Image (cartoon, rainbow, N blue to C red; front, side, top):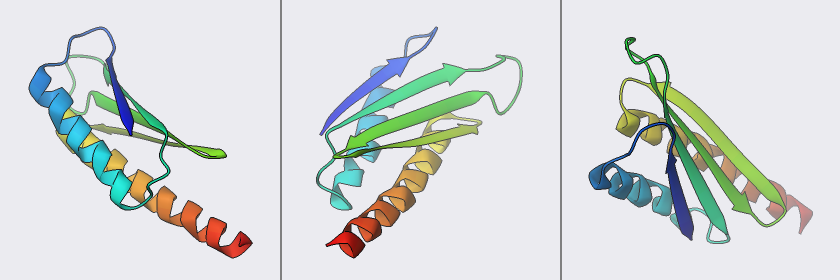
Length: 100
């Protein structure tokens, strides 16, 4: 799977990008037909606490799954977004199994 990380209005360090790649690639364990995933990192209002926003969009055949989480750190938001996508993938797989 190809993971594209976009940091908007700031530059993300390589350690953060590697962490995100590792977490998002774990989604392949649950569904191996993931085509591409895009991760958007944003800082909202730099002076507040929960200001790190992570949006993850993954493309699977016939569907696009999306999760958006806001937390105190990018790592925490990434963990929560990946967990939300894992639930969406399981639901999508269940629907595919019902059709066949």
